[in-house]
Length: 99
Image 1 (tube, rainbow, N blue to C red):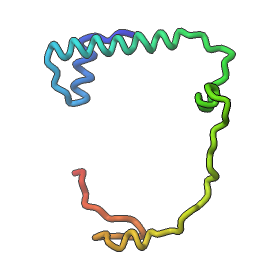
Image 2 (image 1 turned 180 degrees about the vertical axis):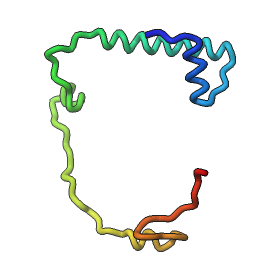
Image 3 (image 1 turned 45 degrees about the vertical axis):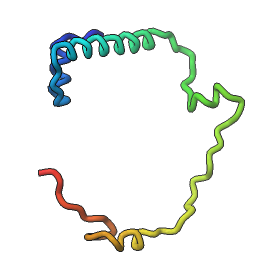
Image 4 (image 1 turned 90 degrees about the horizontal axis):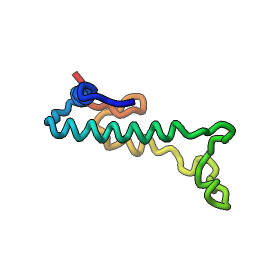
């Protein structure tokens, strides 16, 4: 997959970026280099290889030490919301920020 100057201009427009011609050309080169690397990775034959749950397990001789998912503190919602200017049904009320 190769991008064109038109693709870069569209991406810049969507991102609300204003690129000068040299910046646009540099971005085109960098993006195409990135996609070349992605294509090289996709070309590797991975049939018969199981996905890893976590790469550290394969690289090391130890299993991941995960703690039990248990509640360790009591509910402090009311105490935490005492200083809030506005609370309703246990939720913080904030001013509308999107018009």
